[in-house]
Length: 332
Image 1: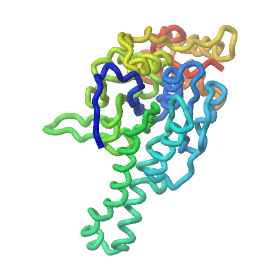
Image 2: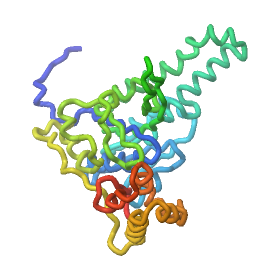
Image 3: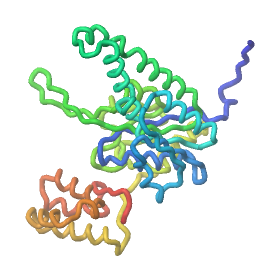
Image 4: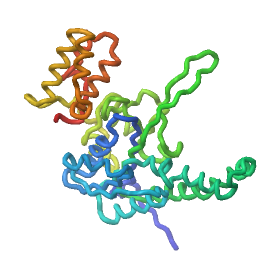
């Protein structure tokens, strides 16, 4: 077989584009992943969603147009690479995997598979388990690596939504312990993708680049994704343009602004009531909180979280609609 080579500038097909978003509970992972996918796919591009969490992405079907596959256990690595290939062959413009963490920690995922292998090899014999521990990793880790290599061959843009888990690192030499948000997946996977970063805790969809060890970007990507901005379709469109090799594609989107409630809506009235309660003091705010229905008034959760972190409730009265510290997925 003979090989020929062509100038790099002659290649106009989109390069492989993979993004991983890591976030804890209430960080807006799914919504952010869908916004990125829509920006990458464009207004009319078809989006595929591989849902590994019982169809939880389907609650966004009124906000985004997409086709879904709800994957049940076992979450074997090869099933994820097979799904990516199927989405590419079907002509989808982008694929969202939510959540990719199941490949590692789900039923039948890598960790569960390793535990089953160890049980098969050593049973309940503790000493034998110690001897067989390394061997028990061979099949699951080999399958995981094969999945990664298969994914790297794909040309469909893939967005991996990954769960974040907060752990505490003990302090050394008298230092205080530090909190670390770890990606619930193979520790090396976020470095296999094109772009990886995490979202701020309790602040839906906002980019957190405060820890240089928690993100991976090329220089051009740093002009697209900036600390403190909220993920939007414009970020996805800019990233897709970069992948197509368009010059000047890395121009940063306009700074995103927090969503504000529609005038006259119930959410707006709750915003106003919360602001008035905060202005009256701690007791009034506490009474207001107790009057809320956590399910019906979930839109106020970001406000309450912000107030909880604010030392002075009086100062918090200025942090309502129009302030960058208050966010919400969308007005009800």
